Image (cartoon, rainbow, N blue to C red; front, side, top):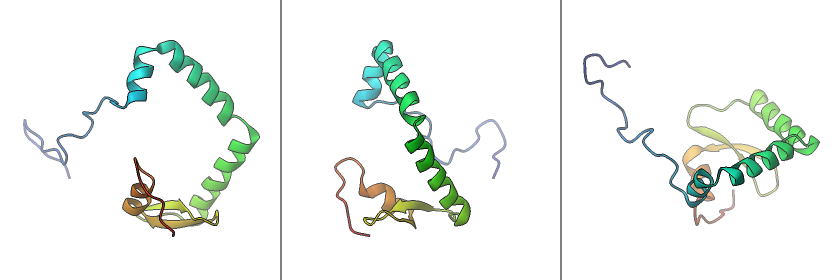
Length: 102
């Protein structure tokens, strides 16, 4: 769907306007040395064999059973992966969210 003319219509006028206003985003923006330290830690952490094998497992699950539109992979209480509606999966453990049994 392409809009033509001088004023293309946006689907969501607020999309892309947020500049990361969480407390941690503000902190790391104001303290570049802390962000560099965090980035170094994350780089080392995600390079460990455990994290690599975990990512490989998730990638394989996505290859074997791809998601349709509007569906996420979700971790069950038993530790398995299942397809679940995006809205229910992402709403569950959001800010102040309560875990619900799947």
